[in-house]
Image (cartoon, rainbow, N blue to C red; front, side):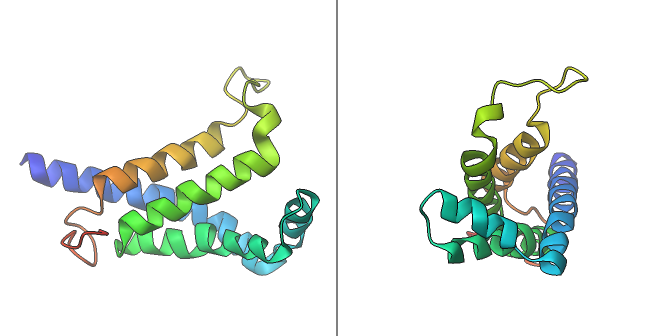
Length: 135
């Protein structure tokens, strides 16, 4: 019984993180990553790195939703969020929102839930059945 609940929790975690993050990825597919290129080049980095957003916000969510290479998907999410935090949100780390919450709670959610996926893996309710080292 415990394993069934654990696997269901992993499924809910994967689906929530994957679906919510995929909305950001679809926006970038539709609108492009030009604004990210500007931020990246302003930090002296090559513009092509902006395309990494597709890895963290399209590929990773699909992997999470399907439960295929799930830990890799979680790693991509964590990497994506660390880059976003360092390029865009570093000055907001200690800020609170107008409603009293942490100003970066969405970014924190994605970062730490990605870390949870890395640690927990896919679980049984996945395409891979959670049998691989990266699942």
